[in-house]
Image (tube, rainbow, N blue to C red; front, side, top):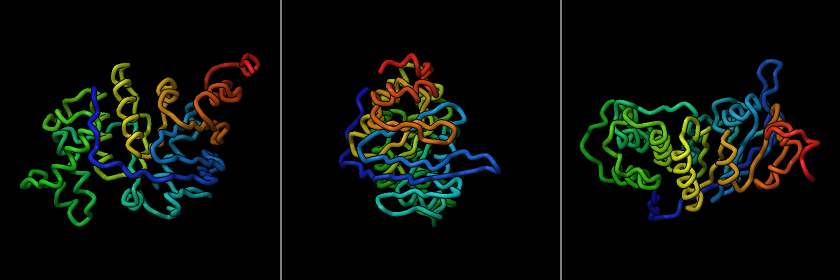
Length: 267
């Protein structure tokens, strides 16, 4: 598959998470977590189930307020910002559970995102998606579809697509919000090997075009192949950070997540 080139470079933003802590009752889900995601790179967050990855994503995207610490986007603190305000600041997120409008076409799913950027029109347009064509909206939708290599699916019903293509539709819809930072929550979940390979190529292309991508993913092969930097979370604490090679060789990571006894790891 060939991913179409964008006419302009995507404008990524530096994302920083500083000393973030989040508790639920007496349970500390995330403790003093810090990370940095740079433009033009895929930065990954990995760890075993229950490590706090989704909680951290919820705090970064504004779904959950942290108890301490904050998120910074290109030097601007997002403290107190709701998810919609963070979206308007340039942050987009996908979820592990697909959330497409199955009764709409692929293009109409993206049209919702484009027109949703205008708060004054979103309720009208959600209930009137088949209004007269808007060339500007159509162009933005087509560009997003081409960026992820599914332009030929524009008029297919979204509900008729297999999981792999549905993930790409969700990704294209996120791009329609013109994000500077893209948060991806297990985008390879449920994908076949071929579908994962396609996702790999798409995400690599988006990073090459300048987008900032923060990825939570359990597919370690995909993470190792895509990432510039990897952070490892265990029991809510960042226990390691570095390149794929550094993380793979870290004995604490091997013991906590990659399945090796630290005494068996070669120095």
